[in-house]
Image (cartoon, rainbow, N blue to C red; front, side, top):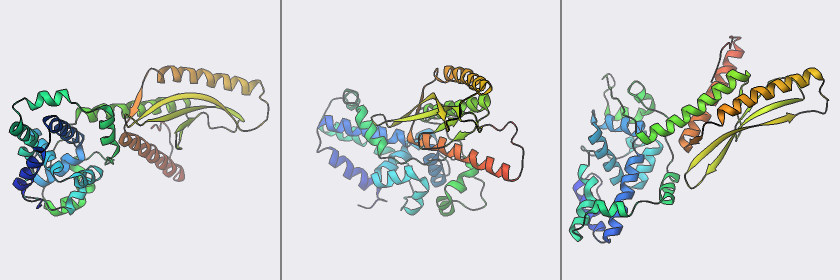
Length: 314
């Protein structure tokens, strides 16, 4: 089928849907809605603006309907990297409003009941939503107007004039705001740990804050643990403390007092950290890991240039 023939795509989709039962059409509509909601990101919005010059909230709904109409491969590629659309055939019109109602039209052809009531009666299960999220690879960057040419270079080169000023403002998806808030809470936890201990984040597969940086044989490790919730496709984050030993040398009274002070700091930290819950999507977890690596690289650069790191925080 010619992907540029939107009317042909619409007609073919409706004909296929009309072969289903009313319940199956309603379930398909719920899948469509969920895929559309998950495409409400700054990267996809930026791509829609590049292709259309301007994008209202309603227009962005219609753009995401068009993106879904292109099929799963195109959709998933655009979620992974919106710049991938530069390699696709793009019709003059990418606001496909009628595709957003194709399930309603198909349902009405075979049944007089209300498709929306049928959709409410057949919501997607948690497992179905988790399966959808699991197949999506997430674009790791927030895309704003000043940096759109950096993040979407091929799409901009193909559809924007080089010297033309281009501006847009993305209204965040409430679901995305929720997860971004979770990410910011975790960053705040990192800042709190560093400010109270003076330590630096030691990155490994599970993540760990080590306190203190000393030559002592015994010290406290403040650990960040991550567990995978496969059903929800989330990482659950929590903190704990354990004593690390690197040798067999016994502690004297000075070392014991130091460790006692560390225990007091660790107790205050855990009391604060345990009051929060941290649940991050794979995309947000990757953003946090990138954030930590960037801070590590910044510190290394500063140390090599003998630049003071006074007050440096995450």
